[in-house]
Length: 167
Image (cartoon, rainbow, N blue to C red; front, side, top):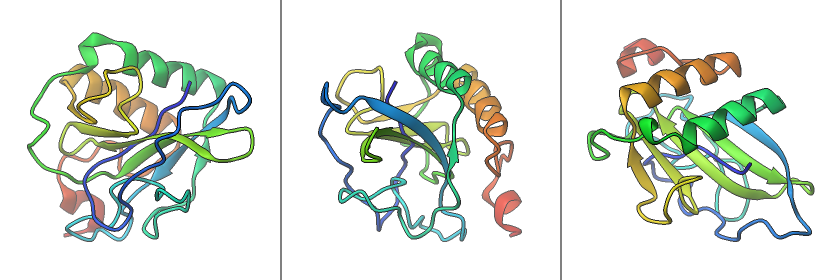
């Protein structure tokens, strides 16, 4: 059930690499608005630092419902989600973070719907360990946009950075 959002940024670099232990099962998944200041390059590469602290440029997280988590897991497991050019650009505005019962980050995923790209830490959930950055197809982008909106995150349907930040 673990998953998080991630894309290229600067300040919040590496994520925790420990897999969930049997004694620390996934307790919840949160959706996180990222890079809310509109800084370019983005401040956050991932929603949380390797030390488990929120990146300074994230908004209020939203706890996802069990149905939303099931949808997210299904999107990530669907081969039709993947494709596209993972080197096109990097501007993650949304993240998903899997927390254990003690509230520690177990996995995270940064999503750039503007760039059709995701980055996972320690890897993209449900995918091989490498690469941690994956391009997403139009099918995947559409599904993630819908889930983003359902979770109540901002900027889920924009197609250019200026639409998010008034530029």
